[in-house]
Length: 513
Image 1 (cartoon, one colour):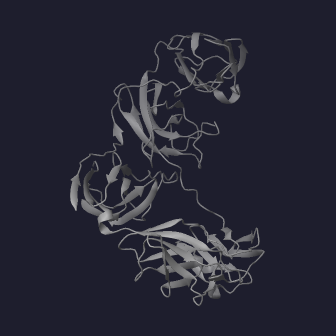
Image 2 (cartoon, rainbow, N blue to C red):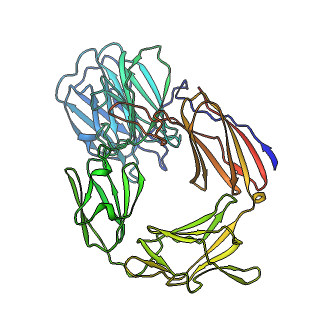
Image 3 (cartoon, rainbow, N blue to C red):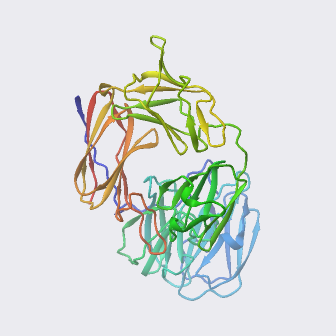
């Protein structure tokens, strides 16, 4: 093969320094309302007032002030009034002495015409000094490494605290700046606050650090946070019919499949297939309107939604592309298969080049709901595989409709090779190869520096991803909020790699320490 080589350094840095950014609420088609003047003004000291007034640069509406107007510290209650462009907060108690206050308008103000909003922070102090410490953040998606706008970041006194004492939101570049912070130790978190409660809820995209940081005038780091949606523990039995004759069951993590029961069925006589450690597919011998599934104290009644009138493919495949290593093609049906009819020449290959039919006399078989054709001994380069109607029988006596699909077997010189030199010190990792957004290959249980070879690749554009598989479970794990275990690092090669026929491509994938 012709050899083709490129080198690209791909990296991901968890913590780095950056210029201090300003919060603007993210890119908008039309600018959100802005403060034209206020009393007190932003940054004012020695404030002694029982009223806060803010005048905006356009007519506005007040949106849920009890939820979206936040004065921190929250030691003073207030009444709000909006007249045209002016918002007034009448304070019901006296402000505490020598205290820096932050008034947050968290999507509380929208313009009258377009409904644009933003996060506005007004800071003032009742003493001669203003808390002036700053912490900057950048938030990214832990899986895709893409920047995340409109994410709430906050500082907390403790890990148990529900709402932050300081907070901000990321802009269009995923940057957020929390300012006017008192000197001290703080924990930090980022979360997609969809329900606007300023709390990190279990099902929201999030990240939180279990170690605190010391914030003072010398603190200049920009914290890079990677958010993900935690896996929510399943406490119920998940069961459903994926077709009228195939029952899919998934158990909670703390249960084992060997204690599973289905009322009225002898479990040992029902064909099944283990999909993964907590999932099974059962191929039922007859149709059931409903089934009662139980596992220890868990129970679920599963209803069958419709009857079956014909034997159908679960997924219709227009063509099968086989490499030199592939021997077989498989078709999955919506019920267990009972038999195949080989007496009428029901299976054939048609070559459009010379208009010749070849009868398939051997190499076909069935297992559960899967039909399999072993192509060894047959010419299968750009031929049409035809299955006559009635050639395949399901367990209830229904038969298939006619099926036609194209088989293309690629010769070795029509395929490419991708050699990847992975330069890393990671102890455990795996590598994924994607084409057209779908994973086409994965290699597990790798350690340290390795050369990984993907051969027999169909020409096209591929992306490469590497996951630090710290717990060796062969999957990418998101953030775990109970133990504060961070999401596993996932690195993406910097650009797509074009694989050409009869070419051997070389790339170097450098993972930072």
